[in-house]
Image 1: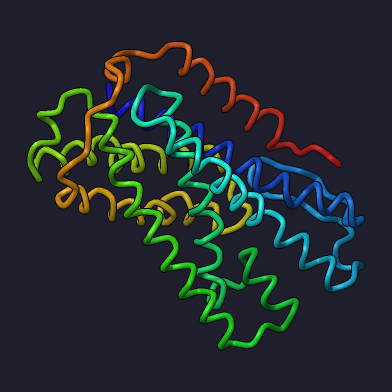
Image 2: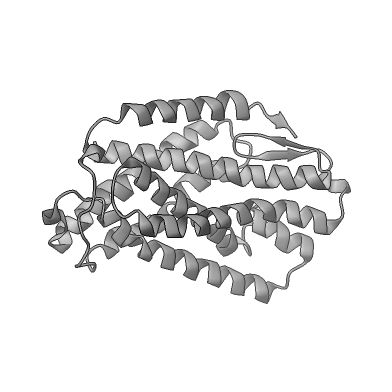
Length: 260
């Protein structure tokens, strides 16, 4: 049940991150007059081309900035709420996905021109050297965040024996990180259909590649404490109902679009 419950937390956190990210684009677009329609994983702007270049850049940048703010705001919360149950695991996933969204766009900016940061680079004609520097910083930041998440995941173990040797630690993080990411990636890709942009298919799986770092790094973390709740290994029906509600809103309300 640990794998199922972590996957549930991952999907919930991913959907929240996606919606908040797109709300950033839509709200700034509405303020600046782009005529936005908010969808589940993208925003249509019916008047963006008529806006000044600086306004278009702010609209593109708004989503990544919201994701970065999400990650930063959750850092002290995650540090304070070590281990525990589903809510704390959900917060950990949400923090990582917020950082991953921002830093991932920063990292791929020079080559992924259809992405948010890539659009900003193109609109503002950012020099290639600066684009590369920002990409390197994004990759370094994402790697650091991933490594730093090793211990927080291990702390969800309920038995200290699961953390006593390198093999058991990597096995635990495989269950709480890697399998939930793979299950979640498939689930989210299906929820993203129909495909509006190729990133809708690529992002759910590629964004989780960084989780390989905390999985393998578990071998080296020898002083983690088991602070997890046994409830994570039991059915969490209230949480499953919350996920179902989120999926229904995602598909039935947001997918058709909401004009702002």
